[in-house]
Image (cartoon, rainbow, N blue to C red; front, side, top):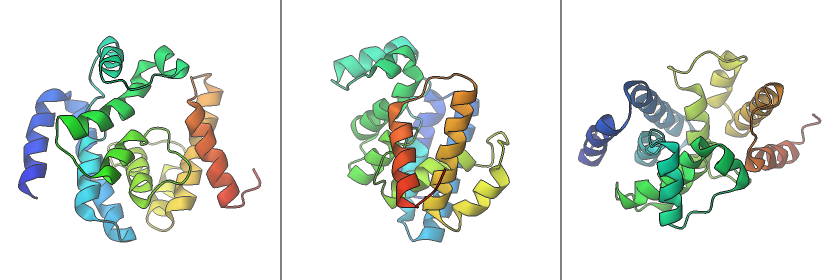
Length: 194
């Protein structure tokens, strides 16, 4: 493991709670495994996985204040549910505080909770790794999704998006419009009926 990754791990360990740090390591290793499988740059996947939740443990009011300070837009849904801000704020902090200069890594962190149409391979890997890492509680279809992740990123992404929308709707939880947009984009791209 290179020096930069080791240094970031040390800093993150002091900034995240134990469970979040364990999840972060799970995502980092899962993302690097997916990168090896799908021909993506392993170091980019490691860094994206390591930093994807770097803003997760920041209190909600502070997240809002930091977004204001750094001129990061806050949607109505995000204002009602500030935990959704951790992706865009995390992308900003990855660049600013952790000196990640690679745009692909920063972009992957920014869209790791909602996805987006036209995701890059690294975007998909991080999104999927966050969902399937070994420490995640077993969700319905998890076994299928984990298998799919190593076979077809688009199919796997679509399945996760579909399952997430069903879950959020069934519990009347706030839905970020970008998640729905992403789902509809991949539904059309893959020619899915429902």
